[in-house]
Every structure is written in C-alpha cells, then in structure tokens.
Length: 224
Image (tube, rainbow, N blue to C red):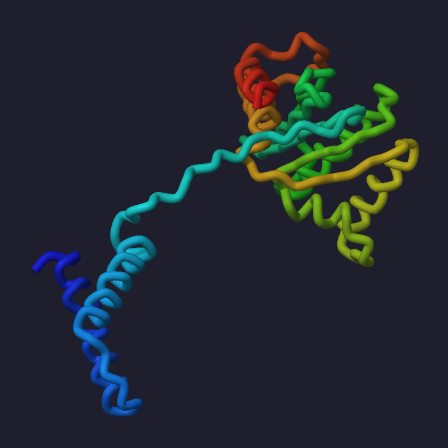
C-alpha cells in the first residue's frame, strides 16, 4: 500500500472511530455519507499541509534583494573578511535610484576577529560619508552583532563595546544617521568588494568608476 492510500485509510478509520464515539457518548448517529465527507476533507487538508511529502501547493520562493534608501538618503553597504591573517573590507555608497556615488576597498593587518574587522569597516564607512559631507546617511551590514552594539544604548563594558561607543560619536555631524542589518543576500556588492580587495591585495577609492567585477551586481540591485 502506497503512502497516499495508507493516509486515506487511516483518515477514514479515524472518522469512523469519531462517529462511533458520537453515538456512544452523545447519542448522535452520523450518516455514513457524513463520515465519508469528513474523511475526504481531512485527507485533502493532510495532503496540502503535511511536511513529509512534496506539498501539493508549493510555497512561493521569494528572493530577498537589496533595499534602496529613502529619497534624499545615501546608503553605505559595508562588509569585511579575514583571509591569510589580513582583513579585507569594502564599502559602497548608493542613492535611492541605486546610483553609485562612490566607495572604498582596503586591507589592514591589526585586527584579530571578524567582529573587530566589521567594526573597522563601519568606522571607515562613517569616515567616508563625513569626507563627502553627506548629511542623511544610513549604513547597512550583514554583521548583526556590530549593528546591535551600535544601536544599543545599554552600557557595554567590553573593549569592542567601548570602541563602538567612540565610533558612534563620529555621527554627530549628520542631520540623520541610522545603522541597519541586512541578510548577506542583500549585501552582495560589499561582499564582492571584499573579494576584490583580497584578490588584488590593494586599497582603492572609487567614484562612478567602480570595479567592473561588481557591475552586474550593482545593475541588478538598481533595477529591483
């Protein structure tokens, strides 16, 4: 007996048993057609919602993409990675149309953990925005711990907590500043810049002349 036939059989027995209980305990006798209809409805629900077999109504696949900033804002996405005992980081600034305003890639050798590396990239992003005199800025990272530390106003007595507090002071010159978390799938351009920095082992500032390696990713984000 296959799985579907077995599930139909069990559902029918279950409803027959419920019909028997209704007669014994409530003196309500259900017609055989009613019992069969209940079994059929239960079978239909089971085949739709069970987690063991391929669903009859598959869930739609929703691809998460980079979200454009509000009009008038510049969003800076940043990322960092540690390779061969060196930190490589990248940041890219874009407007509400997905237009690239500039960015930076770099490398350092004085960071020991990925959280410190991400914090350094956050600091570089803020410095970059200040150098451009942008007033309405948001930064975005896929490192939840750094974003949470930055946004938290609770006292953090750790070394990294103290450093994040110092970095937060650098945002005083903005009219509006916010830091957001995004999943890695929404931070692909910054991630690609990290890879570029690692492959080329170099630092670089860019404006509209961004590396060709990120062109397709920038275009995809802009049209979404």
